Length: 616
Image (cartoon, rainbow, N blue to C red; front, side, top):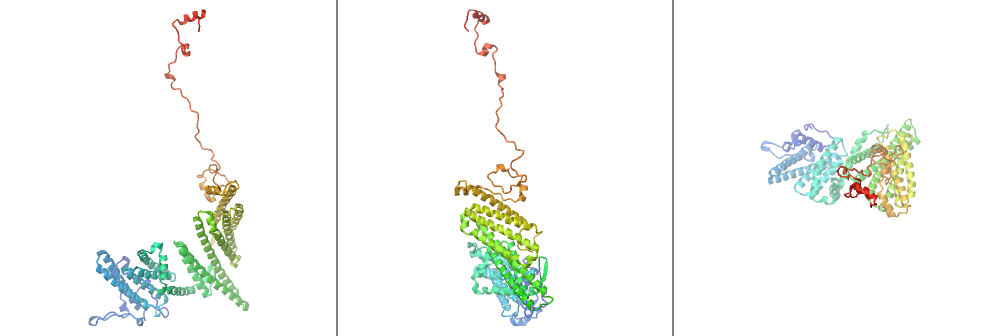
């Protein structure tokens, strides 16, 4: 930025963008490469003819007072005096770490004291009582002064006081990031990134992480809550005034609204401010959804968003009512068009308000589902009332959807009406599913089976309604897809299998403990139909897993057995091989073979012996 060129005033006050000035100067004069010795004050005093005397009449530099503030560059002088003292202190800090000289540590604290003192002076010159600058500059000066004081207290190891200052500066920058241009938002987020390590270190030294308070946002909230009585309670009101001023400036440029392909002019300024407030809250909520933010923080953002849309809905309803009263008295050629535009704006606001309310209820349902998964027994789930709480939340969802269905823009748009009908049937099926869970805990298996049939009918109606919709609108907050309907269908089938199994086990003579044990051993496959083709070659046939209830079994080529069957080894009779035959000496005569001995007579004795009756 050229400092010789005078900065114009905005109205009757000055506007000093402290973050933009310091960021540009630091990047230009050395701090991009951490060269603090190059970062010095420029020709500011000469440009405004505010120099001290030289030579024999040398005097100290003139101090800027409120009476001198006829040009914003006088504030630049004070600002860069702070920057000069701070940059010198950072240079001494780096040298003291490398050399270990304690004198430089003392000199460092001295320079930080000077920067903190000059920061307080800048805050006083930019205060609301002085009336020289706009509201945003007042807050930026407060944050900058708190940051310089925090650096001083950090080096003096006054950890709690430093934490208070850093928390105050971070809170202001966080609020200002939502009230400005994209460049100002980036600068505020960069300043927050520089402050966060200091907050973490102070919390570590103060042992604030012992109670699981390690998140910077939680630390800042805790610190601000403890220091409400020291002036920080006025911070939120001041920041809200800046936001309101910014919204008024943006409202002048918001001249029309586009929703589902239709664009209508926006003539009511108050309504435009409310819509801008709701849009800002929506942006904050979407950024929180992308990041890892705690559930309680998201709930607070949802409450702020619903409050903003609620205000916009009331303004739009009053505008429609006033227009109807005025039209009833006097009509003109443009009366009908103006009434149509106002009704369109009201439908746009009411639709988004009810959709965000549904989104919040579904977030609470997800939270209760997570808690249900942590319960180890069905009795604990029922006694805690979690099933009933989920059913009540789905009742609220269905009530909001019915209110959306009654909007005139929904009734006139066939595609939008079909989308709303599909959502109603879909969430009716989910509600019925949790009613089934409540009945199952009470051992009312037949009632649960009957309700599961009704849930299947609701889901079929949702599928039929979605099949008539070509593609969901990209601007819609709440979208139900055909894939989600198919997943719910598989869940309902799984529940039906388990409910029927429970009924048969209870009526087979088994006691309750045996039934619970057998049900815990059952596994229900909840894979979608689109995955059946992929896993068909890998899964075992039905005959090998008869103890499981298959939810993905289809009547088209079901895999009952493996065909052709695989070869299986079986036991067989062993074969005998006579390998000792060639090693046996057999007798040559028949008696020897018969096991008899021969006498010496030979064959003649045998012949005559037979004649005389010899004994054999």
